[in-house]
Length: 256
Image (tube, rainbow, N blue to C red):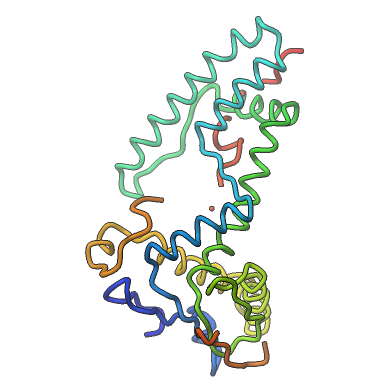
């Protein structure tokens, strides 16, 4: 089966997006290389070259408190900051408890300050540019991470009309973007939700970069990370989600 996980990460994986495999006589087939230290170095290099920046929950929370102090009166900030922190603590505890439950037993987070905290977060984001810049960074990262993953992992393909160009032995970002556009066209032409095949390919590529613990044990190559077209043949002779301030913060319009 074309989308089967290889027995070892050192194997080249041939992958076809599931829906296109069902609907097309000659669906695109991608060759995904194994990811070792060399590939991981190129992955990190592309993130730097493309200026991809990501900010986590704690980064957003710290910036929200700075924004609160800068946009509210001292008295208002002094009253709101402990409420915000108490809300975050309750949210983190809820998430921790939910993670230990089966999916069908999980419940939504409910807190008396939830609406106020979320409103405050949105108000601060509108008033505090550093918070907006962090959100923009994460939105850009959500776009670029899949492209970088494809550029690193995909070594070639068949039956896809997309630009094939390499740099330092890897696909260029422009080529990855061309693959994205070509897959979307195939989705639209074959009754598949536009963009779904790209998402499937990106997920498979990212899975090659970030192996699970079990896959790492079975891998013959070192893991780079232990966390988190008319139909033509292209083989390059030598031949894949960001945190927003809303989800990190969540409070009343700061006092002027």
